[in-house]
Amino acid sequence: MTDRPPDHPTDHDPARPDPPRVGVVVITRDRKDGLLRTLDRLAALPERPPVVVVDNASTDGTADAVRDLHPGVRLLTLDRNRGAAARSVGAARLTTPYAAFSDDDSWWEPGALATAADLLDAHPRLALIAATTLVGPEQRPDPLDAVLAASPLGTAADLPGPSVLGFLACASVVRREVFLQAGGFHPVLHFGGEEQLLALDLAAEGWGVAHCPQVVAHHDPGAEPRPGRTARLRRNELLTAWLRRPWGYTARATARLARDAATDPQARRALASAVPRLPAALRHRRPLPPWVERSARLVAP
Image (cartoon, rainbow, N blue to C red):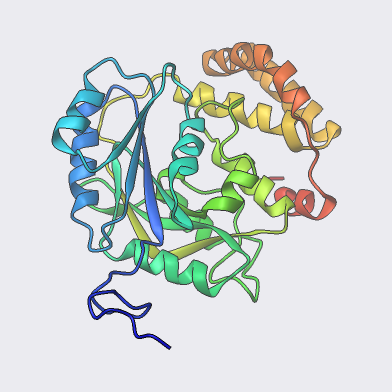
């Protein structure tokens, strides 16, 4: 047997760093300054994750700023705003086994990505981690954290935290290939409450979605109003029903939104925005397995 040359690294060479386990996908649109702050924070993480930025057709010079100030970031520029589905585009370009998502106003606590990777390594059925989210300079807990921690679905023996059917996208880490095989974030929804559909689809395939409070993300949305958000959330609640829930449930959800639209401008906008998307929702309709539907009714009757 011939020895390797002394300058050839061996399989166990301590001088060769381990390949990264988690890459980060950041989506953005016309929020250059916030994105650059997020990229500065991601660059300072001890994990040194590879970062993919997916620019949803910004017009404020975002792409040029990323190229100039963060040349090590992989930048994907889309010719139209694809909404949350841009995360799927970014995840497909990573080569790491796990993908963490950030928005241009969110980032990860130092050490959080290593903790997430350890949890995913140790729990083979775990497909998605819903992290703790600390909001603003005050680092106050996001109200969703308490909801996830109190999930009525309990904690399965093979998962590291309570099973959930919802999460905050910009504070989540996924098993990348499973996420892509499940279809990622559905393009019919665009933006607003897109997380529930992905959680349902993962659960329907037998994968675990769990809240893991030891994994921590930061979110600083600022005080800027987000016009239309309520309408988008209500629209996507309805579209998710048309995509996955039984017809009886879907009919009741549709009637409820139509009734509210008579007096509520946000409901009216939601219904008007949902109607043109219903044919696409029908084409992609795939009712949940009975056991997942039972879980969904426990979470939101």
